[in-house]
Image (cartoon, rainbow, N blue to C red; front, side, top):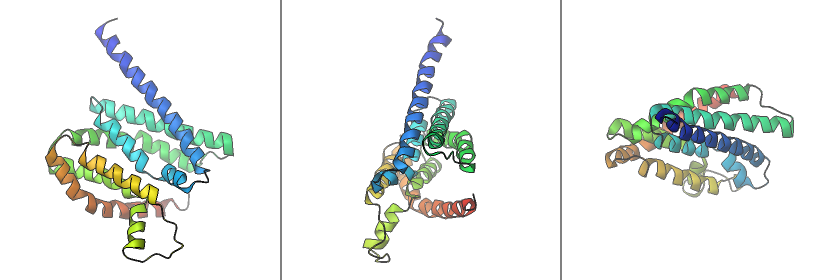
Length: 216
């Protein structure tokens, strides 16, 4: 076997593994939707897990092309398995949401994974801003802010449903993305400074995005 053939074999194994993991994660996420344990349902429906996996794929990819293709393979498999299992087990295939999420897996996801790879391997403010923005996505479910408003601000009623497990997971993943994955300390510093403002910005974008999807 020549050098090119030997190089393609590990790549094929990585893609096969990622597709298999994506299928397992998609089925598990759909099964968790029906769980009676609220924290399991929270983890399945929060973006934090997806953001973490995407960041890991981008960080440890050998090339930008690897980051793009591997992230596409994983998340497309996840979407197909999630909605395929939904159609098989519950008789509902997702409708327009299926096309939306598969479309994002084929377009936005590889761009983000490539950006993460670039930012993790460079030092400075711009790479830090990229990592801070990606880390801010872990706060999009609002679990941490709900705890803050309940215990510190006292703005929520006693019967408001809180999500402490998800809030803890959000904070741990945010710390890993900002404080551990970037190679250089300067990038980690800038990411730490950028994350809070980007939490506000991404939260506003999420609200607009959610409003736009309400009619679907």
